[in-house]
Image (cartoon, rainbow, N blue to C red; front, top):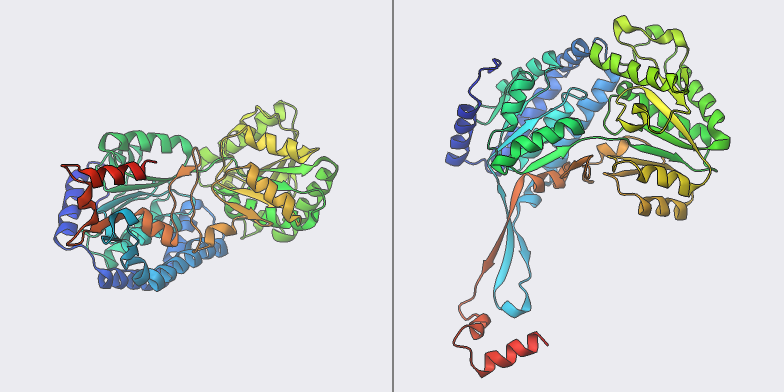
Length: 469
């Protein structure tokens, strides 16, 4: 196991590339690898949950099982079910000018894929890209977050049981190692994390022209229509926002609510928190903030907004915060200035600004003034209005009348746009992202295009003239 910051990453990459070149995984090998991985994940799930608990200080066991267990196993099952069809060469029609030639697409592994995974879902966001890379026939080097060392060690042990190191290896270390890792000449580099770090990863990969998939974040808005049931919206927004204590890239970052319904939304969210997390100080279903630095950052965002005139509502009460255990209570923010850090930066915690609006146009203008988000949530039973909202905004993905659940759809691609990311994965989209779609043209014995070669005669002159008419 390579854990030292002085590890020779270039040598490790070269070892993996040579192994891949000598024996690229065929479908049987890929299927066997994913079956073995699935069995190991199921067997080691209690250890993985315990590792995440140790890294977070406290993490909801059920949320770990849902996000880092169910979703991962669902992805493996989906990929294994469809891999044969995905790998099959696809016939394509040759343009009529080139008949009787024929064409097809083949799907080839690219080689060695580097994956830099984050801390907020350390199993899911490491394993799902890894499964995708394996399905496409690649070898993998994984760099997990230094913020979750217990989980990183558990993953290292799991992979060592399933894969030879020249096929899958884990390297552990901090920011310095991550920077060197991103600068390696991978055949594809997959990064999940913040937009700020994503820029650094992209810059590091640029000298090698390494193809990238960047899964970033941003300020994902939720819009509540004027006639949508406020209690239903509150329940679904609260479930999405406070899952993993808001440490989710697609969590609703702020809510646009009709001005006349803002106070009703506050009351409904309060009831949701009291119902979901009774006896909050001892509740086991609410997750802690990953570390003291992130806890203090959240506190700073809220304090800055308060100093600028915002009204802060801690749920269930102001005494619910527990810095010693890094439990940051669900917090609503009213009247936050639009130029405050709270309204400009991705929050990534259980802090939810409520922004009143008077007209839908006003709400859409506010969203458009911010960078394109990773997710857009619209709560509305009016299909015409929903179509208008979707047409007016371009986000990484849209969920109508719920939150977060679009991530778990194996038949839908997942990915951002611009500041919220580039490239997509999950299911077939991930297989395509980590494959080379190799176009092939098979020329016939008697090609019609031979008429278009010099010396150009009268027939070629007529044909060309007809084609450019």
